[in-house]
Length: 515
Image 1 (cartoon, rainbow, N blue to C red):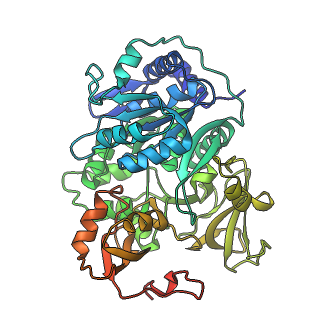
Image 2: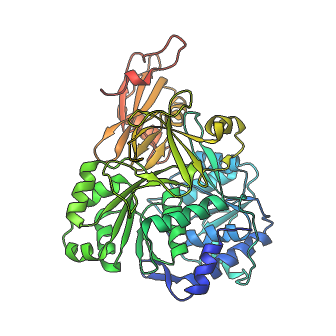
Image 3: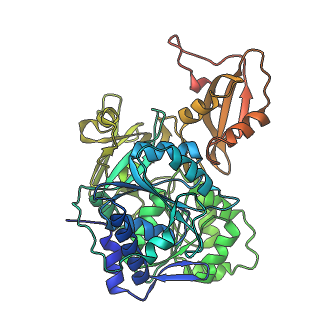
């Protein structure tokens, strides 16, 4: 039997009064988080949630996230984390596709209207029966019509709830991702997948109980969720939560809270390098910080070197995907670190570079990265055809092009999939194309990523206007901004009379890419 809620429970036993999460002036101990999660679990069971059911969660980096996350797991259900930037249409799709029975949704703010969008998505979702509003004030009434509140659920809950026992291969989390097939797919991660990834991540990072981490990576994403939240709870560290990344504020928090470990995507390192650090004791911060971790996209070597020079802290770069729980490889502390490389496979995981026939290629030769090991997902939820393709031959085919050197260090070269990584977030062109195609003034569109100094990639739409229609770039951008999450809409628009195509009518995106 294995339920990853045990990582919280064990720390609550051993470190009951130690701070688990800090958010502003709020401090929650391990025991407090565990007790609140038990109450959430008892509330879920009372509303009819059964082991194996799916429960969605949309919440920024607030202490409510781990409480609800582990409450769902304690009830024996599977967590379906949703991006807080989703629009109603996107929420509806994810709730319906995952067959979620309940949905915990943060009430939102004027700048982050997830509450309104979540309510719209819930209303249109098939089979989702319960809406629970997460209010900033636990005693407040629900701002969402027909919803109960997390505060009410906890107030009526049982702190002595006994965690439902689950099996190692039972689904713990469904993380939505996508490739070239359009709509996002849910990667089913088992309790064993996540538990093993936490153990290995703790060892790779050398994480100690005395560490303090700054959690700015979104907890609904696999990187922040597994490498920081779950691994941090396993190691018994104190996690400082930051709901929204702002580089100057992040530096101040690092200095004030004595942060020792920071993890971020490349754009965060770029921002920290380019922010005004006035008032921050960088010398003191350099003495406190012992390690930085980068993932989510390739980190430019120049950014790595500049950051290490300024903050006097080493950056370990790794590689992984939602489908691999997420960590697959890392630059390890006890081995040579090669800038520009994503390191070597973690313990218990194998990686290869293969050609189009799935035959392993020689060192230095480019090919697709394939992975097998304890970290590989069970499969995509309700997607047998996608599973047959992605998991063929017993290896997970990443769709990423890479090389491996003679020492076994891997390098990311390119992506075979059309996925765009903007600021560490995955954006799937076909989804955006299908939304844009609903605009009455658009006849044809192709969306792709173009290089961008700050975000890594920026989203660009090549548009053929409908006959007789005249569009402006500002009009298209404003229109799409209302229909997809903020990180997804195109910031760049180029109008063309036609798009290059193959003889079969497939758009040749490679001819649209900048040279």
